[in-house]
Length: 86
Image 1 (cartoon, one colour):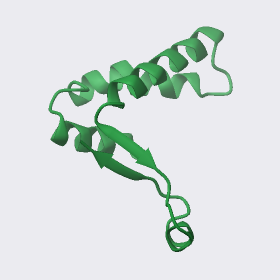
Image 2 (cartoon, helix red, strand yellow):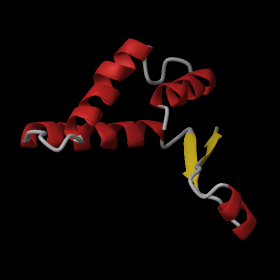
Image 3 (cartoon, one colour):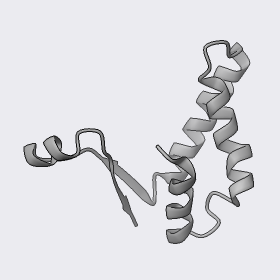
Image 4 (cartoon, one colour):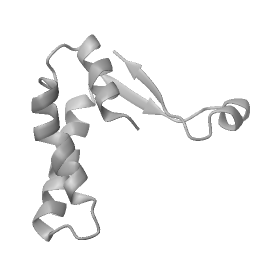
């Protein structure tokens, strides 16, 4: 998933909700990516979980993610998510 594209879409709907691209990377992307490595320290994993939770809570009011709802959509878009912005 292209996270920077997600940042652009959210920024279009809710400007500056996630900050600038640089702030977004420093605040969310870098800690989340660092915590997912196989050699991540316990501190990195804890920080990753905290940042992922904060990001989820921040986006809860304006982004809704859902999987394909019917069998045709599931066949066509088995690996896709649908985003609804409010």
